[in-house]
Length: 376
Image 1: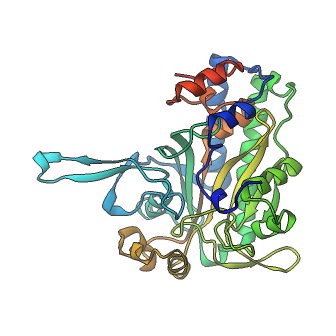
Image 2: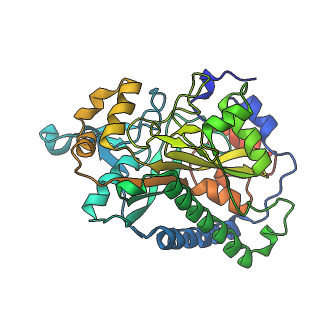
């Protein structure tokens, strides 16, 4: 059994000896590279259209790089284990330089953008976000190149409930399931394959309840056992410290609200207005995270979460000041992994079959031996 503390952050399997055991030995891709791309872009168009329809969003441009001083880059966690790519733009012979970072996600930027695009409560934005996360271990479902549908929607105080979050997640799942059925009309062999389709509905459950079910297991193993059973789940309350002394997973303190007290269906006190969608990937026989997000922090919950994580100095950044001063809307949002979603819809064994990025030689050779060929 793994160590709970070591399991809180740092995605990926961790070494290639273990990965070789995990990669499927009986894999044959259903679609070749050309059909994969055609099916992928059909799915992409469907999901973007229906996310906009279901959530009342419109598409906007999104930055690849941001000014370090803005404080809007996503730190992904709160232990400092994943840092952004940073570079200096000398500009005008270094008279007016800019220190820039490649985004890791657009989580903070898009909340600021709600004001830029004059979004009223109930309106929001959808982006086709590309990012670099250099500190991932590169395996079959983690890449240094990240593509996400990063979306954000303005809400009111009365919308800050588990019911609103749950309804939103159900609408997202409707778009993903709809894309699966849409693509299978063009490529029926995807449905007729030996690997089952995604579940029709998600199981909604609190991180605190998951710990009760598997008290001795670290987070990833808890998730694995849960998703094996239900095939698709949404886990509420990721970031709050559970009764074993650890959060379900490290979560940054300055976007999702993971401290607000809520109630489970049977009336027990729980915490957090955020969560993750996870699915069971039948090809890889592993749990895959498709989405992370939730209702965002208020001035009160931002301060509380920064106090808990020892990061009150963040309040000096423009983004954090804007929240504290009520200059940007209350909101809900998430990042939905595009390539992870394509893997699930097209029943692929490797991210490299649906996206083009860099992979170490050892991984490419190991994958090819198992009939998994990554795009280059």
